[in-house]
Image (cartoon, rainbow, N blue to C red; front, side, top):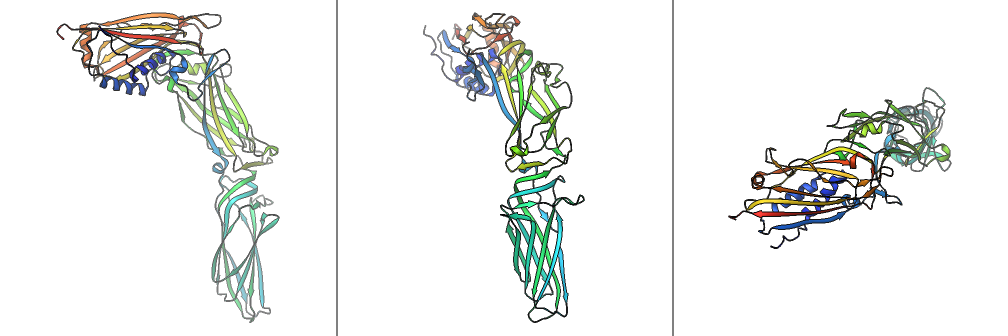
Length: 538
């Protein structure tokens, strides 16, 4: 009798991924796989009357299963594989961390009361100091302005003569010249001036008033008829939307906004039910790139792994809490440069294996930062508009270790095609495994209420046997072949009619509990076929 046509569509592709994915301990069944099982159950509406069909004949490596398009797998000259994952956890620019506040100058009223003028020109000078406001009471020595405006709203009361006003701000300079504005005033005028390219040098000579700006108003009243000059000139001013290109001073000791109560999800273990891992060469590295010109200390108040299923459920990475990290920063001689600070967590300096041995589903962390931790006001701090503080994480997992009873489980929506014509059905699975991992597989057929109707295997059994490991080198010296036959007789086939979902459960262990290495040359060959016996009255 003819065989079924070879099934080539997505269900077979996903079955390949499922088999090797289970073997390697990645996600046992992904949402994409669930979607394809749904498609398979809906499209396979007719069983052919033929007797047998091969449905899978494939040879897969680790790169085949994870479909690495982002450089996750790194291979050395011997073919040994390391999983490398990199991500940016936090980034903040100096412009966002230290914004320049809008400034409003206090109103100045210049009074004139000259009833018997002896001159055709009346002149009066008014000088005042304005303390530039900062969000954290920073002391500012100088600021180079990238953009922004200075605005003046000037009005008169009672004065009918022509008025000329000169405004001088000695602290604000461009190309060696102080800001000087010469204005002709009517009854009321509003003036706005672009400060792009100017430099502000602040006056900090008075310890009780920091960041002072000196502003001088010179008012000239033309009085050719020698009439009385009686009235006031009113001055209001603002600095708006100031953006800096460079800023120098002492920025005080204040809390730096960092992520708090954050979660780093570990999708690898999302379907984990039980099990332990031991990969002794794992390295969890953090790199802090800092181009702020000020000392920073980070306090790690919490950095712990969490598992919903494996005791003790929460494990700290660090032996001390909080954990302090002093961040390197560029000196004035290296302004504009970024200076890295590296923190590497491994089995020698942290409890990393206690934290990961529980197969956690997430890592929770909470950090706080403080600037100028020594509070030394003699230090000159600086930032540029391009200055940035970044925290990056890099996980390096050399695939050299052991797995003990790592149990993965997931539920798939699945409805079988019409099985009334079947007397029995057999599944034949032959594997040739060059990986150092053994896998037990079980599938439970359930109704819509999650009640178990039957199981694929009578008992859990090793469907995939791990390759033979050399205990000295941890390398697989020979692949292992295993053939598994599963038969569902008539009474069990009838159970499939009401199946609405399948719970798939896998248990992974390295061969005989040994330490094993994974290489790019290792592969898993899978051959899968079915044989169906039809009922006599069909």
